[in-house]
Image 1 (cartoon, rainbow, N blue to C red):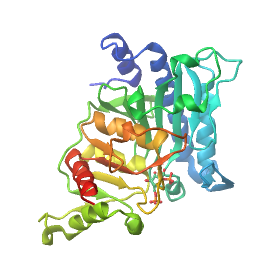
Image 2: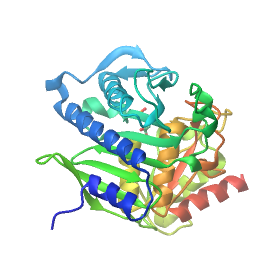
Image 3: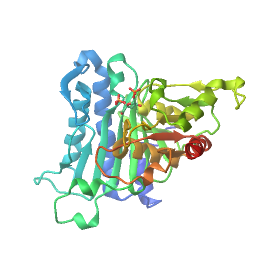
Image 4: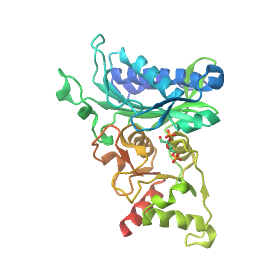
Length: 335
Ligand code: FDP
């Protein structure tokens, strides 16, 4: 049996469930189409001369890979002219990108991390594109969109998703009606549904954390991980496994498919020192994980309720299996 295409899924969501306005549907289709192009570039690797760094740094002070810049340009170009957007923001750009005056403007704001897990590009491990869609506040119609208009809590997202460029190229999407996975069928060039609505399995004894950051952990995080490392010889009486791909998309995708927990906690020694970005990494991933039956916290509060104060604001991330996230939060409270 032929599986449902992304286009058909979105049209049905619009028609039957009234879950998505036409403009948002077209916007998601544009992002998804661009992810096909990015996937093509990623898979060419050295043959397409897309590997390696540019020698430049992004606003975070991180060395930009060629593919970071290529994917950023592809997303900007594809989404500029469609009339769905008021502005865009990206990990690779210091400030927002307003839709130029020569194009019609729409009511949505698009945020993205064009290539997440970039350190993996040159060694042929999975990388991905993460995106989040917000509605521009009503009061900004008739005036220029500002960075402030983007600073909405994650609960205001109307869509979020990621593409993962791995052994298969997948698109995982939520518009608030569950999480759906689409696989890129390269022969016919379309996204075909291969899973959904996705329900994250609970109770999987797997955790994902960068152990080399041990010194940054709060006592609660250290206790949580230590208990799991002790395995059958510790208080939990069972063995756990650790997985870390250093590509959030790949780690979160594994967790959506087979459960477990992902942690990139903030550095407890400094206020506001964390690795992952709230607006275009933590919020969209939290929306997806919650929609699949999991939970997402910064260690103290629900990520999607964290007050947004800056486009590139960083946040501690603990997401995945609901009971496990609750345990981390409880250990944090105990100090
Ligand atoms: P990257 O900077 O390579 O894009 O986005 C941040 C991120 O990757 C995540 O995808 C990943 O989980 C994390 O950084 C990896 O961090 P470490 O290098 O500390 O492992």
